[in-house]
Image (cartoon, rainbow, N blue to C red; front, side):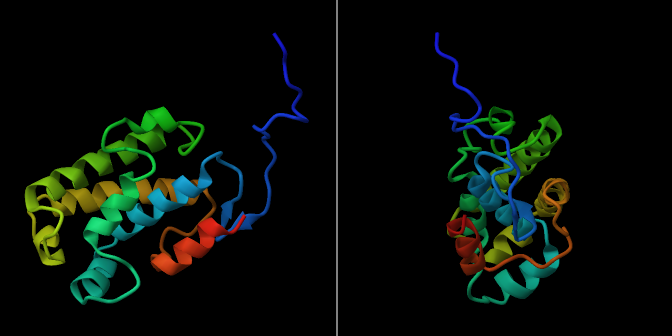
Length: 166
């Protein structure tokens, strides 16, 4: 059996600079984390939802787009977030909060349908609980990454620039 030294290993643990407040290479799959965080952020902010999704403001996608970003790379609609502890999520607490948020949002998406107008989601009786679950996950991840959870959500173009860099 050959053991690689830490010099040649692709799994280095060094901390590098930050990007948008988030430490680069802190998590092996930080791009996935950025995408999940972006979705959670939008899904957790009722003011954003009113001023952006209901108003039809361009550049931020819609509810279905946010749900897709939440689960697209991670398959969190099929696998538990704990599968990604140490890669996308730091610990079991983050994973549990993300799982709760994903399950609540997906339940509503399946009931309302993926092509429904934003108001159909926002008026769903379970939407406030889904928003709260997303808020708890968003705050936990943002604080762990050294970001201010109260900042407004980034546009999709800003997210693309963030994950292209580095």
